[in-house]
Every structure is written in C-alpha cells, then in structure tokens.
Image (cartoon, rainbow, N blue to C red):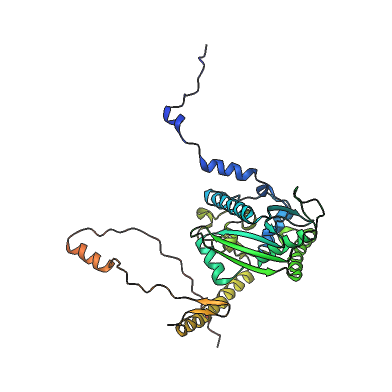
Length: 349
C-alpha cells in the first residue's frame, strides 16, 4: 500500500511573508475597465493610428504593462481630483461614450472641462519647453464635444443631457516636485472636427483595407517612447530580436527587405543627419546671442542655470597614482557602441 504524500507545511518565515504588492497591482489593473477597453479612448486620438486600429479590430494586447510607478501615478491622480472636487465642486471622472470614441473626463467644472496629467520631471519639463502636445488638446476637445452633445454614460447625468462647455483646460502636475502648470483655451469646434476626422479616417481604413494598411506613427522600440509603452508592441513590430538567430539586427531592420527599402533608409539617414547638423548650428548661434540675458520673451521665458564649480575625480591622475603605488588598476569589459558611416559614392568617370 502506497503511503499518502502530504504537502510540505509552510515554514514560519513563509507564513509571515508580506503579500506581494506588485501582484496586487497587476491583478487590480487587469480588472479595470481601461485594461479591457476595445473602443478607441479619447486619450489615444492623435497619437498612433496603428494602435487605434488594433483597438477597432478588437485585437488582444500583447504587451500589457503595469507596475508600481503607474499604480502610484493613478492613485495620485485620483487624490488630486478628489481634492479639486471637494474644494471647488463640479463632477470628476465623468464617463462619456460616443459611437466611435469613449473616455472619462477628469473634471467638469461648468463651463470648463479639465484633464489632469500627472507626469515625471522629464515630462513636465517637456511641456514647459515644447508646449502642449496636439493629442492632449484633441482629448479635452473631444470631452467637451461629448458633453455638449449629451453623449454621456454616467449615472450622475441623465442620458441626452447637453452640458454647456465653453472652455478646455489642461493641468500638468509633476510627481517629483508637486509643481503644476495650467493651459487654457476656448472650446474650438475646428479642433474637435480635426480630432473626429482623425478617428473617421482610421475607422474607414480598417474597414476598407484592414489593420495592416493603417500607418504607424511611432518609430519603433528603443527609438520612440510611444512604441516602448504600447500594449500592442509585439503585434506591431514583431517579437524581440533573438541575438542567436538574428545577430545585430533590430525590429525596425525587419522592414528593410528589398534593395529599394535599403536605398530609402540610407537616403533617409543622410537627409536627417544633415538637418540635425543645421539645427544644431542655429541653436548654438541663438544660445550665444542669449548669453547674459534672461527673463520673459513674448510667449516664452529664458533662464540660465549651472556654471557652479564642482569637484570631480581626476581619472587620469587617479590611474597614475595607483600605478605609482603598485596597485592593480580596476577595469571592466564593455562593448563599444556600434557606429554607422554613410558617405557619397564616387561618380563614374
């Protein structure tokens, strides 16, 4: 008779082990409506048309991403909205749904619609230096249009209730410093029409020619953050490169199949290299003209920083000193970066 095999009893340390916060966050994110969303969200309009096409075609995401940074950002976002509502009134997280787009308006404080963006230090600086991305204006314009036309899906607003919206607002909050900056504008029907046209063209292309006919708006993983964080990354660009079988290739290099593809890529590199050099010259010239000057300049503001004296390790002197003392100089093996050289071919005589 075979003796029964009993499961191993957990140790005291295992019984006391803290639950995994990361696992809890992943489970919570998987159960959220946004993770299961198939219709295009207003926040995706104006970003990547191929990603929107995958939503329309109801393709399953291949790279769902979540984690503690995103979770903390979401909870901070909710807390800020709660504070705004308690202090000033209005409705937060208003569910909206049209025939082609859906979304959740962060804050409707009549007669203005506001969207809150919690961002990293780098993202906050980009907004300050480059301004609001067009896709963010599209997002709030669509929220305003859905509210104005009564396309709501919220128990606090009876279906068909047309809300008076006269302005749109974007608030960016730095998660690192707590600093915020606000951009406002009047509701613009032309901006809304542009966003709706973007949507309509994507839907029409998917219906007529299929998902693969919809162009990508990102430049691929490792080059464009839009692609790095896309839930359809592998579906769009293929699986990660296998060094054993593909060597020093990239996912983008898989697009270079024919000789015409190769010539186009080389010419593209040469053209943008020239544009980069010319842009750098213009920027450095303007920088030198601004030495000693700062302050407001029309819609912009100039400010200098840095220039402080710092103490750094003199690597060459440190190596010489170690050699003098008869010590072994610490080293490490690294791989040098790959370089590319594109030159003009010699013309035939």
